[in-house]
Image (tube, rainbow, N blue to C red):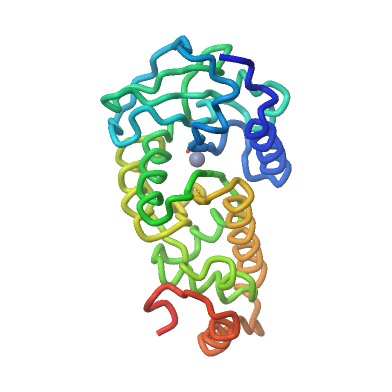
Length: 271
Ligand code: 13P
Ligand code: ZN
């Protein structure tokens, strides 16, 4: 395997982790990202029979991804450090034929493994691919306002989505398909991964109560844009929800926006 450190998809991932860290979304090792790579973009770096550096067992097998390549942040690795040392903090894996092992081909050069949320990532990729064949990115972060909102707001998809939509006009425009919420669960477990995958059948954005937010997209920019728009809405919510004269965008106004921009709003959201 040729050194991947300067491959365009690694450099873009490094820019993204830097931005996420500086926005305060990824303290310490908080958050993780995976990218489903296309064989063509990887081809210049593969040298035929690439040796497997290590085998990393998966708690849940994903045979549907046999032979597919993912770039994945490592467990316990700090977003702050990814761009300076991509080979230490990132790993390139290929899923084994039976789906039970991630073959490490590059990265995690000082040890370690994929993010502990790998079941959620692979599950999310798979479910979103059923909806959109161009789906490639899963991005998890701990943005403070989004988490803060789950301390004071019911954990209900429609109500939470409408509260965020009510904060600023762009939210419904950027994610008319809404936000899913998962009640608090133990993180990094196969069960939170599988429960999340179920929600990704319906949503591109999933908030984990009292933990963080995961978004999916066709590109890093698209996923990043979803995350920052959710977090902007949550920030405005947290700044205004106690104000006695708070106005907010009501259902009638949201319907007007949906009509003006011909948005594909999730059925039932504006009823
Ligand atoms: P990892 O360091 O294993 O990626 O875990 C961070 C995290 O955000 C867990 O939800
Ligand atoms: Zn997390």
